[in-house]
Length: 577
Image 1 (tube, rainbow, N blue to C red):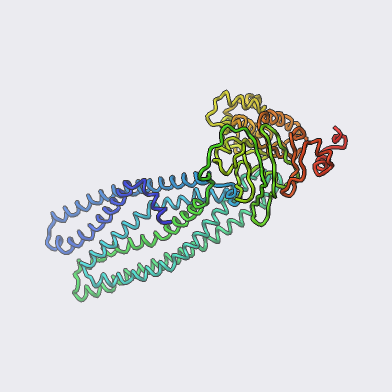
Image 2: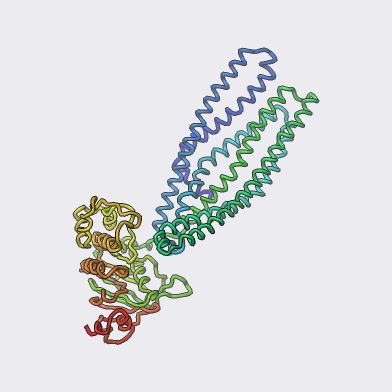
């Protein structure tokens, strides 16, 4: 994991070197003051070297001005390096998320994913900036100050340095506790974000069911977990800081007692003693910096570990010799297809289906029978394991084709329409980003939505709100159909596209869908059986198996499951038609 973190510095090597050089100079300049102080007390003042005193003071002032500029450089450009690294990690993570399969999103809540991209990576940014600087400045200052203190009195220096091993032991003791506590805190923070995202997205349902108090209780529970995790994290941090601060305070006690005794015995002069008191802070301060850095280090490491967890998720990938699907006719065949989301329970069992070019196949049956799973398998959203059958388009197994080329040639209209924040034009263009305005207008006309759009003040540039909240269900559905018209795929999947609409709206949508289906191979999942009476073939799917197949009239004549399903929706005289 350390190598992966370091790799993000590679594109900023030159700036990092300058940043570290500036940090090094800051450390070196910091050693000037105790040296000048020692010369002042032991030489310049006793010998009344007034001009030298003034010159030495001016030199120190000039060096402090240089150090101020260096600190600005380190603070500004160091943070810029951290932000750019954070940006690169965020881009890598977001790009990786686009490649992850459906299965990942089935098992991970949106709010938790957002936490990885935002707050977790912010902590990584802070570590990326402060980590190298703190380590370099503090290490150099400790070495230089220790070396200088030895020149004043090596025994007194060793007495103070004897506290360092104790400090190391205490630090290592509390490090693990801090790590675990901060990891738990991040997880609980992700839980809160997931709860907020879910609640805000479903706020209209909450109000409709007057369940605000229930949502508050759910949020409060997650918040209590966060508070408890924070309590444990801060408890570990407080024990860590109080213990280490106590040990560093002991440094001053040793200096006070041992230095006083050495001065009393004549081993050191008053000037050396005064210089030692000034200089020892140059040793203690960087030690305290390193101690304080442990908290930031644990935060950053926890954030980067959570970043790596997602980056290590296996992405969707093409077969090594995958080829492009071109000149698509639209012939589809499922051969002996078996599939299970959970290895212990199969959803589909030995499915065999064949659909010729331009034909329409309707899938009907009870909910949970496997209809939508069949639709998800065709675009390779979920991949078949070897030995579980095959799905082919134009005779080519989709596992031997590139994912993009397969999905480019399949259009999907679902019951639950997803529209992006933005304008009507932007959402239609999602089907073909480089389309002309004329193509967009034509797609909207064919989807029976153009006339409505033209009644809006801003027309196609009207903002539709989050998930298209400013539009009705039928308007959102027609926008999604326009998007597919613009994409112009050879294969079409309609997954209960009209089941959530009222009868009047359904007529408009069905007209658009009928137009969309012309000349395309179409797989339809239908809840309202009236919409698929004209399908070329109907397959009844129950418990993952195809139990009946045929045209509407043939299935009615069989007097089986399909007829019973149909009878539930229509009166007896409808069956005679």
